[in-house]
Length: 353
Image 1 (cartoon, helix red, strand yellow):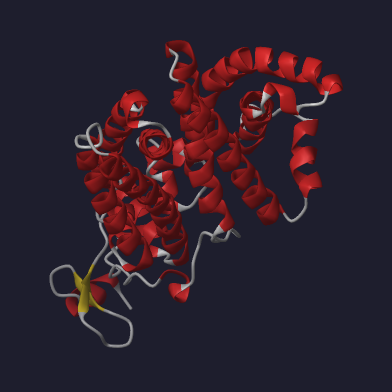
Image 2: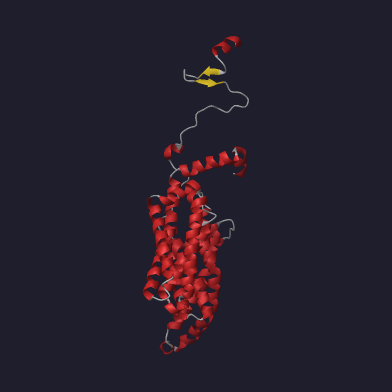
């Protein structure tokens, strides 16, 4: 067919689409493809990112590790300021929480040797490797401080003479061990947030800016609540301040996190994760308000401390569940990618990858 005949069959710049469909424009040098954008059905609804093979052991590990870290920090301050009841609560609370945390981690790993195998190397680019060494540094000092506290509870005349020397030495090293545990505690509370946000799970990864602050604030609120429960009201002033400050940081940074996450914040508001996060906010607010009354009432101190502990646990479980849900639904992977491509252009997006 001659070109003139073709032009007669193509009025203007249109041609009949294959199959006799609607006319389509002839493609010019500056035109883009006129293919209709496909409806989002990525992988026929199947997940793109594989959900982490974790169960309830991991959020329990995240929560109890935060309680241990905050309690050691409070105990170190109490040791310096002469608050024996708060120091005792912090040290013993820290070792109980740390023991529970390690048990949950080992249960998830399957056997203790897997944790020990991670100590065979140091990989600074791996949050798991760094976290293992952080725990291994902090744990022995927290254990020594707790053992010294228990030794201090034994009556002088009730111990055999052969044990008095070692127990006296243990009491003497308890203070420096407790101070070292307090110094090494903050990374224990923060590294778990880095561990989650370093994964490809959408809701965890997009929260990388604020999640460490959320977890640290949550740890402070929970450990302050534990101090309010276990320490005498007259000695628990630092615990109340710590708990209130942690609660405010947690609530403020959690709100900011949800604003910055875009679409991937959606799982935080729906389903099981949504219920947990709502409960976390309500319990944290109630506990924070209760700290203002806890200085005059033992019952208020116990109730608000329990609310803060429960709120912190709900925060960890809620964040965990939201991440798992975001990994199951492919839209939380594909839609943010498309938005970044539209914002930055395909060339720039590929370069960043």
